[in-house]
Amino acid sequence: MVSKTERENPRDAGAVVPKWVLPPLSCQFLEYVAAILPAGSRGFEFGSGRSTHSLRRTLAATISIEHSAHWLEQTEKLSEAVAKRASDETAVLPLKRCWSRLRPIESFDLKNRCDILRQLCRSCLVLVDSPPNPAKREHALYLALRHTPAGAVIVVDDLEIRATARFAQRLARQNRTLFRFWILEIDHRLGVFLKRRLGRVHSRPSLTEFVGTWLRA
Image (tube, rainbow, N blue to C red; front, top):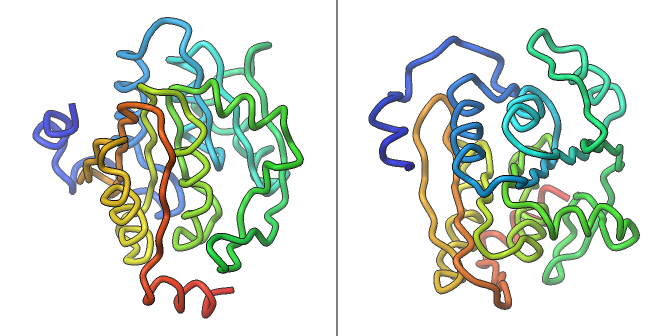
């Protein structure tokens, strides 16, 4: 699936869009994945935008969480917007300081939002496209890897950012018995995880990552 997408869509293909917006080919990839999932599958995204409407077009339900009420409002006004259905949910969760292996990470704290966490646990396709600073998405990616069911696909955006690529590849390496992992080079550089089975998800940061997280705190 990943290699076929790369062959058919070279990296420089597609319209130029602002780097903070998920571009067309990446959205098409989400729709392609959604279309081959079992009927009735649900999607979840950390960060709303153009991807929200791609997921709504192809999944039975889409749950979107966003740190910004303004951006969530703008998402519903996009030209390609798909109307929110009764099965879709959106929520604004301000970013908070979370602790991960003695490191302060700004992320979505789902410990006190059991309703949203339950939705994540039921989702077969997850997009990690927030917090806005891609280097700070490790905790959101870890939540997705940990809580999704077997067979889920987790996509993390912006692997052009060195820190993002580093933690995505480390999590894939440290959990290779649980996940398959690909890097997809199209209009954005995406990391794609396929959850093969359930199990404890490990996260052991390197010294470089440990220091870097504190410097970005």
